[in-house]
Length: 343
Image 1 (cartoon, rainbow, N blue to C red):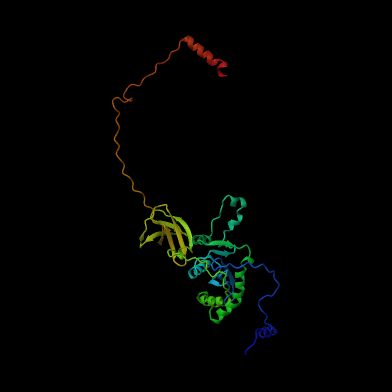
Image 2 (cartoon, rainbow, N blue to C red):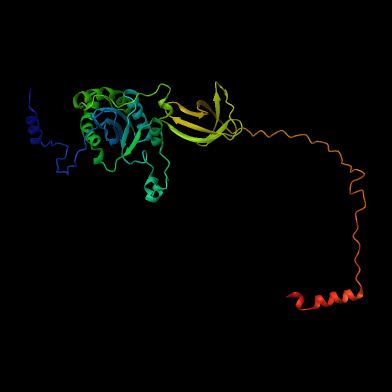
């Protein structure tokens, strides 16, 4: 049976099956021109939705290229989270390279809420707010992070969510996929089919993606980082657990009270960075007892005997006692008793 789209639409409407999309009049915004090259601007966002027809929401993290509109990466997680965006950026950089800029909303994952509390005077004085973990990772990769002021500002990825929310659940259902693990493995095939149908050619064919240097490990950048101080015995505390720095299965000697950077990720677990190198850690059940410094033996002190010419052995000079005559004493008493003497 071969039917045209208008015929199928008319049959569905006549049987009470209307389109789930609302066709209300909306205010149209002026479209921003696309970037001329791939990799100049990558837009990322997440969309919570019941993607598996089980009425349970999960979040789909997505990244698209502004110049071509092609999907660069998709990744499912139970909720919108930093781990999802890290995995998203890892896929984008591994498959394409390092983009020049990333466009996001003002979620606290990307922008600290304290940034809104800075006044114009504080900004002119050079006062800044500590970057988030995502912002720190983008700075290490040399990616410019841009925050959108409204949802229409990143309208290209918002329109992508409208398309995926109607197409992707059906594709997952046809493929018999009902879990996030299976869906994440299926997304690579779906992205390829989507880009072949909807992606456009950029104005400039030269790509702006930068090649990642070979000596850079993405996992050690796209992770949580925190600073800790090492005590005696190369141990430190992290999340109420004591750890010890290990190198080749042995305790790594670390200068006491030195700073180490703790790296945490689901990809490799927990590691530390010290003096530009990455080391493993070993969890301790309890903090080892502090080793007291060895006591120095008491030195026997010999008594010091002063010499024969020492002042202690010689008679001290005695000052002669001054004797006043009776007449002088009367004069002194008159002076002390006079009122004029105390003015």
